[in-house]
Length: 281
Ligand SMILES: [Zn+2]
Image 1: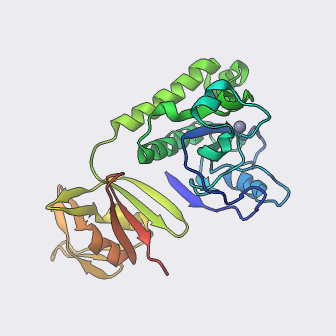
Image 2: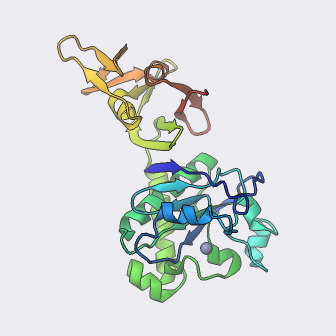
């Protein structure tokens, strides 16, 4: 899963108001034209005349982050709201939800976009400690036919080969299954200036020190790794690092690896993850 951060600068779509999220709202772009991918939608949101936005837009190539999750977007505003949304969210659900747009551009592969959305949702739910009951369709809040492939049978049949009800149920099951199947090891997240990368790779803890798989992390961060089979020395960006070999994979203490990558490492106890971030300039 790759997230590209391209925050909006259009103040009409990004008012800069702080929010405390209580749920995730799923949308579709409703634009099947070729080229209407995540970045194209982001550019549309960023036009000064656009008064609409979402936190994430997903296509089959990438996930674009348009807004920090702690800032309000304009994705679910309406004249009136359903009772359940008023009761469980607020009288203005934009002020407490994270919006995700799913792309249906004809030159994109729907199934890959779908899987990327499942992974993004899992990534969010895990961080907040939520389950699938925190997921909403735009429809559940305002009654709008969005996303149509989870609301209207015709589109559900076309995109998912299922009834709308079944397609939405299946989406929540796919999220739930990935959410609960994940191994309980420390996860590796790599934050760079241009976005966040989440690895499938797992590290381990030994005597309070987090060890991370050198190659998986360094290559995701765009850095080179060399291993000398004779001396068993591992170098990251030309710098020698301590390495432990476990089943043929080299692991290095997180802080040392971060140093070699020019990043800083912190332990996030809530996520049970090592966060590698670009150093503050
Ligand atoms: Zn919508």
